[in-house]
Length: 280
Ligand SMILES: NC(=O)C1=CN([C@@H]2O[C@H](COP(=O)(O)OP(=O)(O)OC[C@H]3O[C@@H](n4cnc5c(N)ncnc54)[C@H](OP(=O)(O)O)[C@@H]3O)[C@@H](O)[C@H]2O)C=CC1
Ligand SMILES: O=C(O)[C@@H]1CCC=N1
Image (cartoon, rainbow, N blue to C red):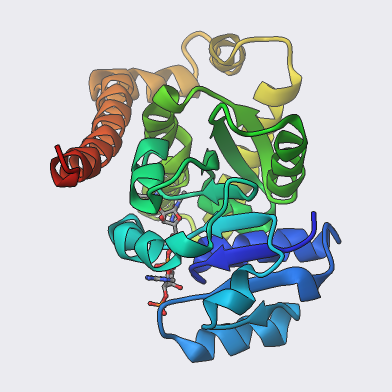
């Protein structure tokens, strides 16, 4: 890895910078970043991580072997249009943009590119992202190794087909929000049954970490582990009965299907727009 050029300086970009710098993957002087206009944000990132920033695209891309696209999907078209002349077939272009396909990126760049499309989640901030990655046929073995190293600094990486990324987005991309929602619900319930919120939060968080660790380490399925907790006529049985009556499993199915469909819809909308703009 020689130089990384990051386009977009939001929370996702910062999670990567933090992971790369903490793991000494590359000298921080070789990490370059730009954004749309927020100079204060760039100087803040420089101050905290020692990375370089610039609005000069020649300086940003000069000698870069990896480019990370980390702006919002709505800004992808204008951002890629601005940088397209600097992108080369030799560079590895890593995109974390939700719903922006490799086809869309190449169409906007107006050239074939080696593209890695990734779906991390916000737990990248604490090095615990569940990231799924798809690569196109131009990505070399060496670039795959670089990709694994890079995403390894922010958590777990798994390789998927591009078609699976909508489902991954609906599952683990949005996933932290579902878990926060569950935590919120458990915190509010704890208060209702007479517990102090802060203390309840500690219990809930440790319960989640412990249960997740059990699923990860045990040879039992999650269903078996649930049944292990559920004594006949006991408290868990009483609680789970209510979750079943309220249709919580069905609600999760509908939730993940809706998020997957929304990811596909966002991607399809951009692809249709780009196809319509192509000269016939
Ligand atoms: N949040 C999440 O859970 C997840 C997000 N993602 C993806 O990560 C990406 C980044 O998200 P996030 O970090 O939350 O975004 P933020 O809104 O925090 O940051 C977006 C950044 O893009 C910059 N930007 C906008 N337009 C341009 C441009 N033309 N050229 C250069 N930079 C530009 C903005 O600059 P300025 O501030 O100057 O306007 C800002 O620094 C998104 O595409 C999202 O889909 C992926 C997985 C999970
Ligand atoms: O809600 C969103 O669109 C983004 C994509 C994955 C997580 N957040």
